[in-house]
Image (cartoon, rainbow, N blue to C red; front, side):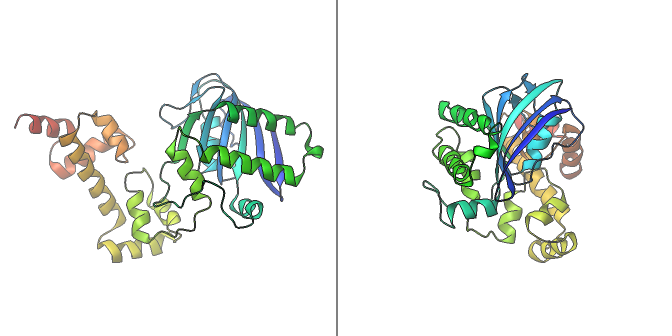
Length: 283
C-alpha cells in the first residue's frame, strides 16, 4: 500500500519523488519511465523483485535506465516497509539544464547500456545530498528552478566521479550520448538479456513486423531462431570452459529458468547441460 507519494517538478516534469509504502503492493508505483536514481531512506532488507542480490536497505542506492523497473522493484517485494527518494532524469530536462552542453567528466559511450539496474552503497556525499533533498518536499515554495537545476548537476557529477561502479557512470554517460547504434549493434548487445521479440523491436525503434523483416534481411533467419542459437552456443562454451553453476550460466545467457535452459539445450545438443558437462569431463 502506498502510504505517501510526493513529487517536485522542474520545467513541468517530475525531478524528485518521495515514495513511502508497505510491501508487497500490487498497485503500480507511478514513476516516469526515464532513467532514475533511488535512494532508500528506510527499508527492512527485503529482497528486491526480480533483482539478484539487491535489497531494500537504508543508505543503498539503485540507479536504473528505466523508471518502471524501479517501480516494480520497490513495490513487489517481501513483507516490509520502504521509503525512497528518487531523482528522475528526463532527457529534455537535462538538455535545458545543461543548455545542450555536456557535464564535466562525461565520456561518450561505446556500446548500448545493457545493465538495467546497478546497486551501490551511498557515499557520505550522496547521503548528505539526499538528506538535503528530503527537506525540499516540505518547503517546495522556497525551491526555485535554478536551485533544482543545480541539484541535478550536483548529483550527476557525484555519480560520474563515483569510483565504486563503472556501470553507474555508463548509465549516466548514456543520458548525454550522441551515439546512434546500428541495428546489429543493438541486437548483439542484448543477445544474453532476457527480452521478448517485442522488446527488441522497441529497442531498435521499429514495429514488431518491421523488426522481423529487417532481422531476416540482416541475419538470414528469424529472431527467435538466431537469438536462441547464440544463447545455447554461449551456454555450451561456458559449460566447457568454466566451473560456474548451470543455473548461473543459464541466467547469464538470458534464460529465466533452469527448466527452459535444459529443455532448449537438450533439443539442440541431444543431452541436458549436466550430461553435456559430464561428458566433457570424462574425455
